[in-house]
Image (cartoon, rainbow, N blue to C red; front, top):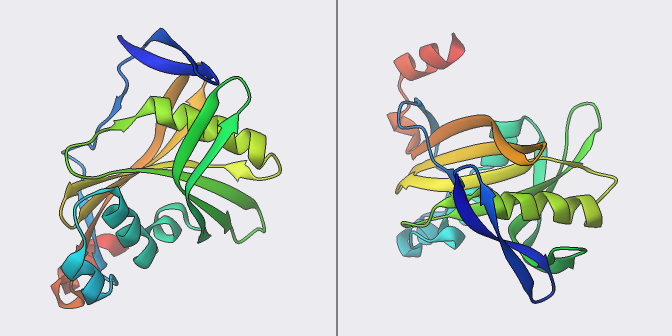
Length: 189
């Protein structure tokens, strides 16, 4: 357990005891190689911050691959307020549709460098989507650089008062010629 600061409204917050608040990539999880579609000029100048991570997720359509949906970036840095919570900011908001016509809202939080993912922001993301997009199914996503071209993606859900990991995958962005026949055979199994 650890203490976290939880927003309770405009200019109001409280300390609350929660289970450990970190979402950490599993170092034992195998990486899936993806042909890097990031434009070279973006790669040449991108930093290692959350904006660079969001760009790589977007250009490589990693949410589509991870969730099996067609996902579209709708807005970066959605800053709004949520009843009983106050101001929240979602790093990027996607909308998506699956093969059965179900529509989703995908709040994405991203962390680069030495920053760590937090369940506090996930709670805020889910609450914001429930209030602002009640007709859409919410699938909360967290993204973290593990290395420069290795990205961990998490799908998270609220279960009671806790945030749980539904799924975690690691994607390694590589030039197309670095995806071998053996890699493809292993993925086919």
